[in-house]
Amino acid sequence: MSRLTLGNVVKVTAVVVFFPLLAYLVLVIGAVRKNLRTTLEGLLYAGAFSTAVFVLDFWGPPALLAVTAMIASGVRSWHLRDLWLPARRRWWKRGRATTSTDVEPARAQRATAVEGSEHLPSAVAWVRMHADRNRHRLPGDAHHTVLHTCQVLETVIAAEQHEPTTDPRFEYELDAMARRYLPSVLKHYLAIAPSSVQERQPNGRTPDEELTEQLRILSAQADALDASRHRRLTAELSTTGNFLREKYGLRQPDAADFRVQ
Image (cartoon, rainbow, N blue to C red; front, top):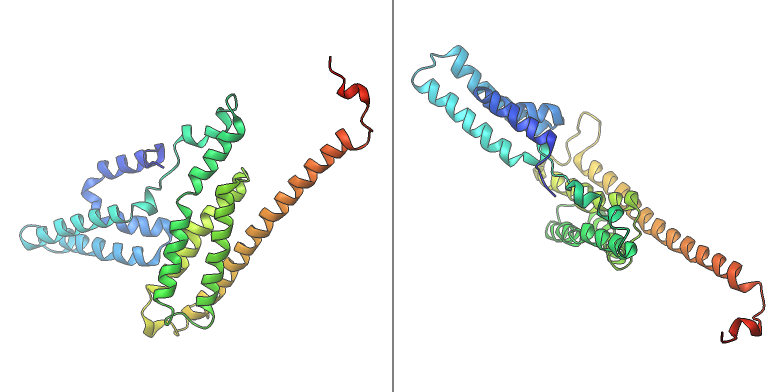
């Protein structure tokens, strides 16, 4: 995985060109990514910079305020790099499974799949650890749902590492579930103050209700991934059986078949 992509280079170049406006960078990141918390934080830096430059006399303490806002925005934009400078798998690694077909293609595809899934167990372990550590904060059956989802994902990941399906869509869904969706839901809920988890949000739901519903969806998706893998393996076994029956099962062995030439 690398952040050295054309899109990221263009973004960093734009930041350098408009360096005097660095205090507005966090606000732009939050607005583009539609992240409310980041947007509010960016408004703080942008407001401080704008006040110092356009309202107060720029020289003296206001200049210090403007420089502080720029530095704070720059540091926070680095902390938020995953939002605006996403890492991508290098193109030569992305096509490894298809470009090495001349030397043991099945082994190459399996190695690529295992390489992409080796970090997934640690991501699931992180979710399980934080769910256990904060089990008294989780509402209702949320803790049980998290543990069930983690158990299913661990089973699928272990099976995928042992015998990869080499299905890009399946690998993407599994990676997204283990590394992004499930950790993100739990992390966002735990970031909410315990006194606010019962407050109604604009959509009419409380954070507790949102967590319960999202965990239910993720649990169902984990079960669907597990079932999909079993169906694929069953179909592959049936395909092999049909081939063997067509090739060997409908004719009687002839003595000539075993004759030494």
